[in-house]
Length: 73
Image 1: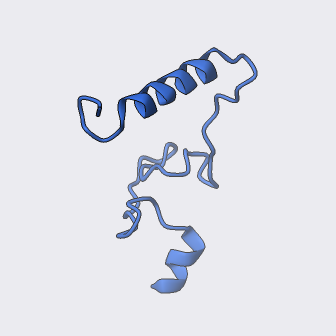
Image 2: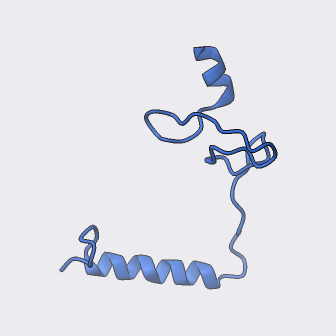
């Protein structure tokens, strides 16, 4: 049987829910997102300091690596 969205089997959905609950209750779990050289969450297209927008990667939708994108221009 599948969940309401139809993307996961019900027992996989329940297993994922149990994992999320266990991690959220774990006091030792790291609750910090990775930051890049802009001191911004690494997948964010908006710079937290300046508000400037980066163009997304056409494959992943994430901000391209600055050194890579600079070498491609």
